[in-house]
Amino acid sequence: ITLKMIAVEVHFSKDYIGKLFKRKTGYNFNEYVTKIKMEHAKHLIRSGAFKNYEVSEKLGYSKPDYFSRLFKKYTGYTPAEFKKIL
View 1 (cartoon, helix red, strand yellow):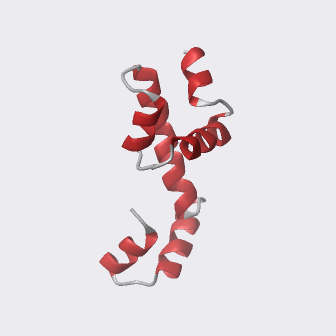
View 2 (cartoon, rainbow, N blue to C red):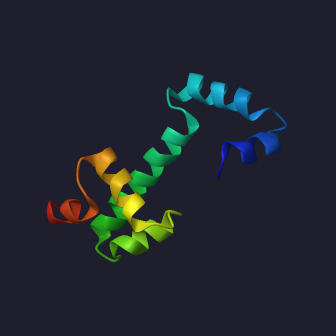
View 3 (cartoon, helix red, strand yellow):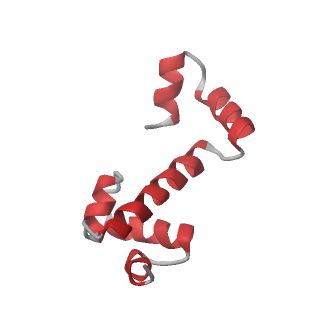
């Protein structure tokens, strides 16, 4: 999902939707989407049912390395490290 998709659907500019979203949530749209994805990633990793590249794919990231960098930035751990601390 993108801000542009939402803006088209509700017939407002993406800049307006972005400002409104930030005002209501305290996050910019991309930060919020990343936060939700990383929380879901934590759940998928905890389940033990998926390899890191599968988690990456399920979250819509085409490059597992990029997913791992985002996950580490968000949690302080790589996906492999996170799996070990469970």
